[in-house]
Length: 79
Image (cartoon, rainbow, N blue to C red; front, side):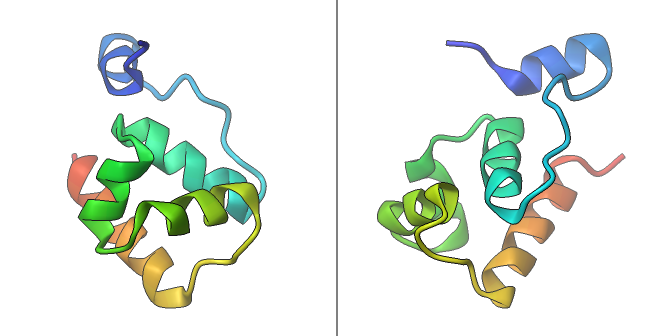
C-alpha cells in the first residue's frame, strides 16, 4: 500500500500528475488525501457508491459536493 500523503511529505510535493478532467480530479483528490472511497464518502456525507460513480464518470458530482471536496482539501493541505 503506497501512501501518497507520506510521499508528498517526503518529497515536498504531490507525485501524482495534475488531472485534466473532473472525473480524474476526484480520484486525484481522494488519493492525495490518502483516503479510500469509503473514507471519502464518510467525510463528505455521501455513500461509497456515489464516490465510485463520480470516479468512473457514471455520475457527475453536484456543485455542493465539489465545494465540500474543495474545503476538505484546503483544510488538509493548509500551509
